[in-house]
Length: 120
Image (cartoon, rainbow, N blue to C red):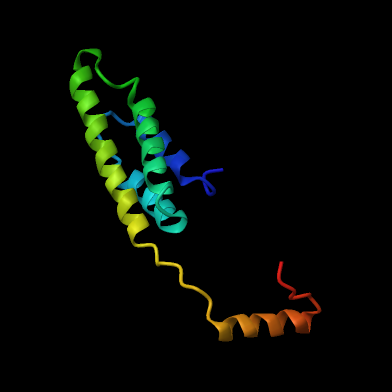
């Protein structure tokens, strides 16, 4: 399970450590990779998810009288994680159209395999 989802391990580590111990880098890495791999929508969405996970993981260790500081910390962390996601999405290489030579090569390859290349 942890091999498939490193965020689970980070959330567990965050839950067993005090709320003042920051695991920002360990949350930022998956956000960057998701944004780089899946584009603009994945960055802010995964940042929001990670901030919610951090909030829940640190809920038990947060002192009850310190809610304003904790809320400010959540907001600044969400901003920083969103920035990581936006940067990851910005680094995604742009899609380029397929050239006619590449299209002809793909059609020849598919014909050699016996697939129909009729336009749909």
